[in-house]
Length: 112
Length: 113
Image 1: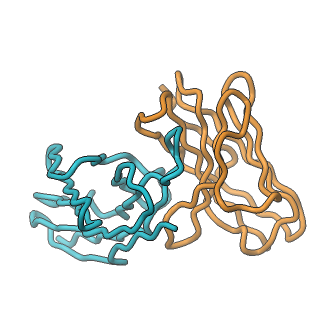
Image 2: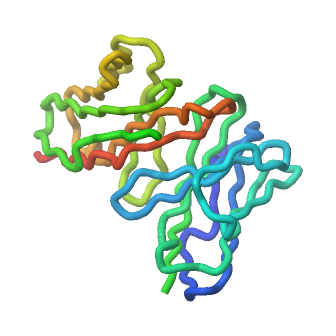
């Protein structure tokens, strides 16, 4: 079992650009959540996808959007990148409401 | 809103016992989690408490007191590989579906030989 996989592992973008990050959930999982983790901080919940719909959302602006595909994989899109968007972006998946969430290793985004 | 506090850093010696404390304030309690995160790696699940008391799992134990808004993670027989950040998290009170965690800042534990 490959677990939760994310791509790319590292990314450098210029302020104002747009970026797409990808996540494949653990086999058998249908729910995907995205988190932003700034250096030295705990992760912050961005949003969650289930059945190809955004089901929950944290306190992030509309520049952050996402998508879930029929195979349960997911994308996180960030438009009009700011320097403050530099962070580790984590994807987590689970198979049921109260089950343990499994995290991917993340994508390190640097905005210059 | 929700607020979670943890010590930023702790240091302990190999073979010793260390207790990492976590205090939380939340408008509705829905469970508390501990995750371990090695540098550059994914957070991995350690424990889940929803009722008061101690949950033991091998070298790791987690305690919860809901009335005090307090939890701790106890690590026994410390090993060098336990050097990592330990994240305390509660479910968001409006989380009806799971995975909507509110994380603390994490405690970076260094285990010295």
